[in-house]
Length: 331
Ligand SMILES: NC(=O)c1ccc[n+]([C@@H]2O[C@H](COP(=O)([O-])OP(=O)(O)OC[C@H]3O[C@@H](n4cnc5c(N)ncnc54)[C@H](OP(=O)(O)O)[C@@H]3O)[C@@H](O)[C@H]2O)c1
Image (cartoon, rainbow, N blue to C red; front, side, top):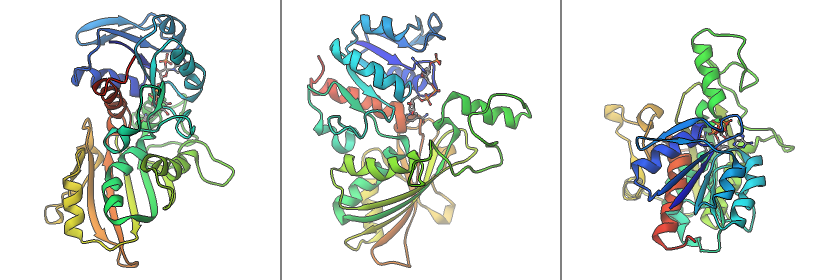
């Protein structure tokens, strides 16, 4: 299969190449794509060097699949051009997620919505993916009424420049270009993505809207606060969820433990709970600090952590492509 990785030199793209290799995705021809700045650069995949090409050149090669992580504007302009030559695009940006004509997919939850006609498929936001992985099985059982989410997001979620900013600050290097408006080291910035007219950030509104589309249910309410913290990789979320029906904590743990792709880390006697350092380089979503909200009936508190570059981005994208292959939905 001819596979283009668009944004191959970036934070997500680099992990995408790693995940494709690890999972032995059936690549017969790899096409790494980036901006004109990177064209000609060599990238390694499975011990072989590949030359980075521009989007113009990649479209001419008419790949079977193009895995996009090169920002929303690139996606808006180029995904349709790939689709026109018959390529199926799986896109990591926010460009197509809320487009009613495009599917927003976490394969474990709603892979079955995909058809051979879907030529541009959206990968949800990183914070959304880890959230719905843990909530989908509980929603099915107890029915969510309201969600309150507070995120603690790593700098790798912003991209290469932000990781560089944190490293520069930690090494005392100043006068370099900054990804954020403020220093991130020894700080917490309540500003992920841009501010919208309602006073929320775009990242917060992704958490409000995307879970409803993925779960195919807009009957529950969601509110969110998204915060950037000086962690290199791995997003954490404190989640308060009110259900319509009461639950038993032992049963909640059993449901989560039985969910593929979810691991319960919840052993207070031994100080076991999810943390970004444990989630690093893992594909699973980790859930812990599972406890009853004693201030409200039928309400649960929990702490959800995942590697934002893996299940939050690259792994989920490759899983969508794997699903398309397995179901014979490509080409
Ligand atoms: N980081 C995360 O956790 C995460 C999670 C989910 C989704 N995403 C999404 O994935 C996308 C990439 O994020 P990232 O963190 O990997 O960013 P990044 O590290 O800044 O990488 C951006 C990539 O896009 C390429 N690119 C930028 N402008 C381009 C253009 N005009 N034409 C072709 N290629 C272009 C860059 O190529 P050059 O090297 O040549 O500049 C680079 O390969 C974004 O849409 C982001 O919202 C990120």
